[in-house]
Amino acid sequence: MFSRDFNLIIKKKISPFSKEIEVDSDKSISIRSFLIGSISQNITSVTNALESEDVFSTIDCLKKLGVRIKKKNSKNYLVYGKGLGSLYAKRNTKLSFGNSGTLARLLLGILSTTPGIELNVSGDHSLNKRSMQKLIKLLSEFGATFFPKNRNNFPLKIISSSMPIGFNYNAEVSAQLKSAVIFGGLNSYGETNIFEKYKSRDHTENMLIKNTKAIKIFNKRKKIIRVFGKNQLKPMKIKVPGDPSSAAFFTALTLLNEKSYLKIKNVCLNKTRTGFYQILKKQGARIKIINLKKNFNEPKGDIIVRSSKLKPIKVDKSFYVNSTDEYPILFVMASLIKGTSSFSGIGDLANKESNRIIEMQKVLKQLGIKSKFKKNVLKIYGKGLIDANNKKILVPKLGDHRICMSAFVLSILTGAKSKIKNFDTVFTSSPSFLKIMKTLGAKFEKKN
Image 1 (cartoon, helix red, strand yellow):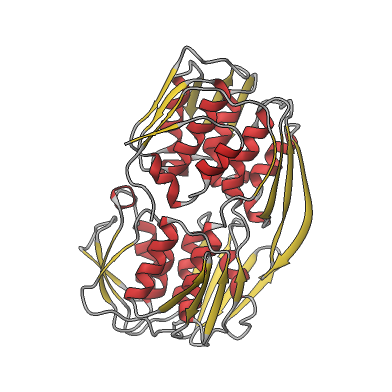
Image 2 (tube, rainbow, N blue to C red):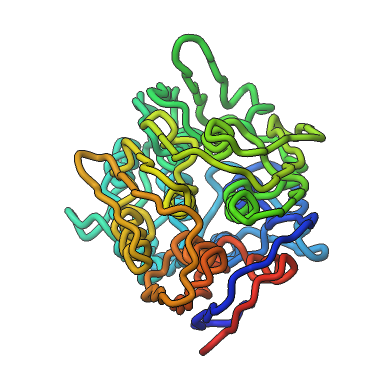
């Protein structure tokens, strides 16, 4: 397990580097691998799973629900599937989702149509503050009930539906809500139809794609996902690729750090996850993809990054779905590129682990970088790659890994003397972040 409650002190600017790295395994695919494996038949093999707090929370919840999970060796697991509708725990058992909104929404989707479920569910301090209103409304369509009534955040009690029936859902930007409906539909009577208004992350569909009796995908003018309830799922052999969101921070650092080169190996390159890289290539970033391969319809490959002279970043709302997690580091990059950058349609960032718009504005302001958020558009007035040896950054305890990681990159690029509180929250998604940064030459100090 990981160190708890430490702050990070940064005082020095990073030097140029030329390195080859592998980032932490993809969190979204890792969590889904264990969840789908648990409701499938027979034994699912998960190779190169992310070993982070969010994934350990997933394993812990599944074990409390009667699932046998065996660790073969580092990052490799066997999940002994119980089949659809077979998860169970004694009445009023407590499940903790930790910091993971993905786990919360997806597992509750499964539990909503699993018979005999009456459980108390909660998260950590950060997750308990986040609204679950949309999730509760959706799972109520299957017949699940949540108590106390009219409460929209954890802790809550869930009582599963005794007669779940599929329904039609017009999905918006949230892949987690879409996945929750897919999981609920798998054990419901009849069909559940999901109509995608916007193309969102499709890891769940990819991992279920071989179960043609249970799910079919229609890609015409708009994508339709049709789930046929009560059809058992086949076991899988999943090899988890590297996390493109974790890779984004090292990519940003390389692009802005003069005379630097980086090769990032075995990264997930699903089109619904690569908006960050598409945005930056438009701004003049020297990024190249090589060695493309596929596993369970998930493309992966190596990313080559070289220092680049970038134009100000202009991002319209169409990129939000495919680059949601990368906006904080994009804000950092915008602040260090001379000129005005703009980001449209980002209002939903207010409902992440923290309000990522306001909190990143606070971070940038400490280095004298101006920004303005109005009518769902954030403008950042970049100063170029400034020397901030005489300035300080303080990041309070927010419980937001992306804010911590973004502030870290900003600090080592500018030399600002920084104190980032609760940096241990980064371990929820990227336990190797500091180790990799150290290999690149970053200097920092942990303080309890």
